Image (cartoon, rainbow over all chains, first blue to last red; front, side, top):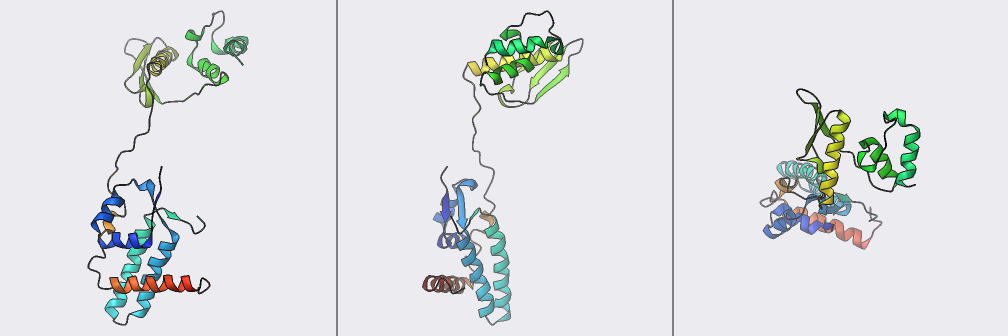
Amino acid sequence: MSLFVLDTDILTLYLEGHALVRQRVDAHPRADLAITVMSVDEQLTGWYTLARQVRRPEDVSRAYDRLAEAVVFLAQWRILPYSQ
Amino acid sequence: MTFDDVLAAFLIDERTWGLEGQVLSRRRCPAGIMAEITRAEGGTIMQVAVLLEPVAGNGYRAIGTEGLTVGLSAEGATREEALDQLRKQVEARIAHGAEIRPLDVPVGPHPWSRFAGTLRDEPLLDAWKQAMEDYRRRLDEDPDAL
């Protein structure tokens, strides 16, 4: 069985709805796909940082909503640890 | 240990098996003994669930419910005989090339697929990407920055 590891850029394209990326990802069984804890770190840190940078209350709220969604999204994946 | 060694060992305790006075052969072995012999000879024993029910009138019926027993059934005057007949059918099926293989089947969309495209119209998308890029660059420049 081959294991396909998606990096942060591919994960981001998936969230943006990139058709080819989505097609490729969805074509593989769940057990063949993984992400790394580095992507988890980068995506969550991105929203976390943004929530502190933006000034408008609606943007702060939006950034926190996205942070919460990202936690749920990332938790669906098999996450490879830093040491692998 | 050979078939005969195991058989001899069981014959010593033949009363336990209710086989006193009987001449055993491999084909006539009850399933329990057969399993022990197969084990002793280095074979593999796999237990499968079987539906065993009384037949109206007399006897019992053993019906396969999983794996190599699916679609098979056998009757016997006793529970043991019904099971033994079913086991022989399984053995015949294996001898004719039957085997169990794993098969991947789609079980619906990936759990993460509902998130695909959720950031397509996100106003903060570019700022988020920039925040990730800045973070990545900081770590690249100084891994001890955290």
